[in-house]
Length: 329
Image 1 (cartoon, rainbow, N blue to C red):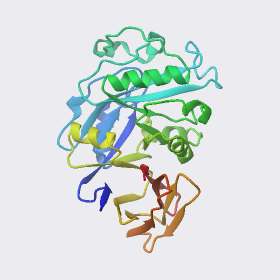
Image 2: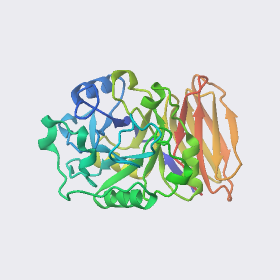
Image 3: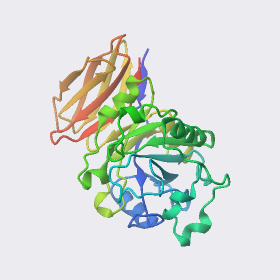
Image 4: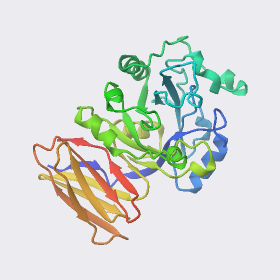
């Protein structure tokens, strides 16, 4: 039986799921962000300003979708700045609202609300009052659970910048995705492309998506890492449903056109790649060079019953990558 994982018969919408505007600490207005990204072929932007949800759905049109989102922090020492205590561990999470008009920010804590500017304060809603954010696996998992129950998908952001390792993040339950590439971090010299973090989660049995994002605070850090969302149409429910069901891939360059499994083999069609590779839960991997690095290729991989999970990478001649989500077998 044929199992379609990325459907070539549906659309792929280019999106940035990590974005900051002048409504927190970004340098561009939401209107300028929309126009800039649309010019560069994007259809979806999650405006994930710090610590508060703002409904930007007035920006949505037939060719552009604004996702309601925010980024929240949990710090080892909440009263201290990461600029002053450089070795402090933190955890940053993005909340993506399944309902675009849901702006009741989960897990609000006033210690972190210095990002809220006075001119936007009247837009902020946090009806549950103060939430005790605890920097621990249990505390962060409880925050994720709370956000899930209130109608949000939750991603785990830039683990390298956060100074966290597997001993920290493998205790986090309920995550929808992990950010494997962060463009802002790369621009400041902290290399934040780490597929190994994703494999850590997967090998621990946590079935989640992987995403790439800009985390842009300025023009120079836009359009470096993105997701391609595989959906039938550009409406809020369709895009959120595709995200929730891992119908997407992350990229910094190569293009994936389709992926399906049939009769124990995976068929991956892609463009702009020098080679494609399969990874599994164990040590079994395989790399297939492209016949036409400048055009379209189809790589065929054998799927084994003991693979645990499979995921696929496409790499171009400059080292740019496209990464699929993992599929448990």
